[in-house]
Image (cartoon, rainbow, N blue to C red; front, side, top):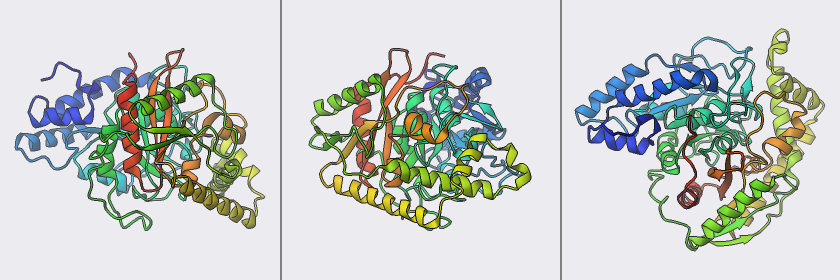
Length: 464
């Protein structure tokens, strides 16, 4: 057996050791579950743990011993965000208003993990219905950042980000409607991949169906690409998902960025905030890509002010969500959801359609921009992780001031975008940048992210 703690290993490392019989899936799972038992009481990353995980790991071990692994992730521990169905577990979505009846089928992304042989160790926490960035919810309380327990891991994929940083398994499914994979990835110092819309099938649809995606969260770009192989499989339940792509998404990640045109973007239709250490992280990333042969220049896409566009998409989703909950149960909701829904209750159909037209205009502007540039490089968050215990005040202002001003553009335009950690700030907290590519060029986004990851060599995990 390797002298390295299996809980700290990447999925690729685990698979290599399984193949040579130097490590078993059962041993790997035990290392992860011991870490969960020791640290999760204060991290609070899980909505539920899977009591059948050890049986699944044993079945995987038997397959490896026979030389017949069932898929590319056989025996690798993984988690599922509690916005997705995991058969046999309720999908509570972080809410006291939801039904505790177990789901009878897996969501498409979960089915992809299972078919590849991954061992599902549990469901991770989410903000209520995925509505906000601070990582707390009425049902499960506060999830905390493994780098500093006084800070939030971010959201809405709060448990997935915290679990990845705490090494509670190497692979984690998050979802992202405005930054909900990338923000917690940035604040937790891990890689978060928002694929192109349609790349990973979705069902059932959540509150933000028109802009939301599911995607990988992991401690390395290569693990994220490996995981995307399992998630990005056509599923007829989602009429808008893309056809199967036979490629291994790892194939081009080591190709580098020499000759690629990279735009450093400091403005996306409005003056988004970013602190001094965030700008320094962006400059560091730009220099790292330029040193590898990328053609880097400052540029600004010709975008409308997208705050109002996303604000209406977000607000209408909240209003629709609240309208679907029985009136006598609405008091159980996070108060911020009710505030946003109330503020948007007077929106007319014409106003919403106007916002949708501006969304398409923004997507068109980005498509035109990518005629000049292969990749975009932007900040990912305005600051490092914020406090975990502070109340959520003025959510509509916080959305583009404190939470998601750098991320929601790529949900509106449906492009792939990846949060890549680039180091620690003066307080010892992770900082990250965002790498984006044109719609359906997930391969380029992964390639740029991997080049940046290799250059900066950010810390892989906090010292817990």
